[in-house]
Length: 173
Image (cartoon, rainbow, N blue to C red; front, side, top):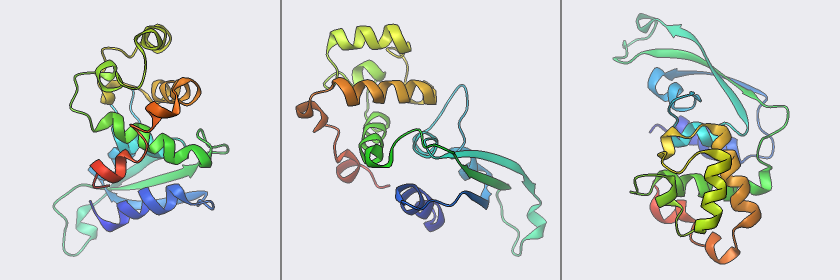
């Protein structure tokens, strides 16, 4: 992943003073990583979504560059939401929770968070959010927000320690 993408993910998202709009020229694949979709999402899109609406505005002709890139290039707009969907003081906890979920080698959300939520909690979670048999990529952003909200409110600190700092020990991001 390029320096510029890492800068966006680390510096901009954790900043107290986020830009209200950013227009970026990105490789199409990178731009899509930050865009939310109805059917499949990735870790980066879920981590950006609490703060920014991401929109691919259009394609840019590769011949406009020298040398001509071998990848599709798009013009992308990031618009800061009027009110963040995650309060900044809770963002690191949200980040750890999401990264934990996406970096387990388990078949579904139930198996991934089995040590975090009790069986009774998961019955209630599944009734409310319908996530038990889904993989992390199959959850939409609202399901992730709901799952995180339940985690924040009802998970004891002893279990939260399993997730806290997970990024530092298991991720290269």
